[in-house]
Amino acid sequence: MNKTTDILFLSHGGGPMPLLGDPAHREMVACLQQMAAKLPRPKAILIISAHWEEAVPTITANAHPSLIYDYYGFPAAAYDIQYPCAGEPVLAQQVQQALTNAVITARLDTERGIDHGVFVPLKLMYPTADIPCVQLSLINSLSAEAHLEIGRALQALDYDNLLVIGSGFSFHNLPAFFAVNTPDVQEKNEAFEAWLQDACSNPLLDEVQRRRRLVDWTAAPYARFCHPREEHLLPLHVCYGLAAQACDEHVAVTILGQKSSLFYWSKQRAFDEPSC
Image (tube, rainbow, N blue to C red):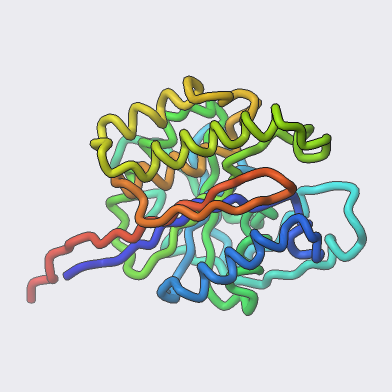
C-alpha cells in the first residue's frame, strides 16, 4: 500500500503579527489559508520550527501542549492567543525511533509546549485546532548537512496522511525588515530568493546536485545578508531531506516588504501490506 506525506516549507512572518491584522502580512495570511484549503486534511502534523534548538533533535511528547509566547513587546492581544491542539505521543515516539534507527540520538520532551513558529501558522491554516501536532527541534550546531540527514531519517516514518511543516523564513535579516527597503536590499533579497527557488525546484538538477547546493547554501548570492544566522532556513533542509526530490510547487509571497518563499512537496511511500 502507499502512505502519503505532504511536506511544506513556509515563511511564518514576524512573531504574532500575522494574527494581529498587520497589513504587511496580508499576502502571507491569504497564501497559507489557500494552501490549507487545497491540501488533503492531515491526520497529524509534524512541524519543525526555527524557534527551538537543542543539542540533539528533541520531540514534544505532551498530549496537551501549552503555548510558549516567545516574543516580546507586542500588544496584550498577542499574549491572549489560544491554540488548544492536542499532541500526538504515538507520532512523537515514531519520530524518535526513526531518528534512532538512523543513528541520530533523539529525545522526547513531555513538558515543553509549542512556540509561535508552530501556533501562528497553524492558527491561520487550521484555526479549529483539531489536528494533533508534534514539534521537532533544530539542533544547535546549525549544520546544514545534519538537518538534511534528520529529514532523510524521517523517510522511515510509518504514519499515513501526515503533514510535515518546516516553519522558518526564506529571508530573515531583521534590521532589513524595519529599515528603508532600498534598491540594494531588494537586489540582495531577490537574488537569494531566485537562487533558492532554483535549488529547490529546478528539474534539471539531480538530487546529488540539489543536496550539494543546500549543504553549501552560504555560497548563494548574498546568503549571509539574507540569513545572518541560519536557523530560519534550516527547516527547509529538513523538508528537502525528507522529500529528496524537486518541489512540486513554489509560491512567492511578500512579507514585511521582502520577497519570501513557500515550497511544497507531495510524497507517496510504498509499504508492504501486513501478512496474516
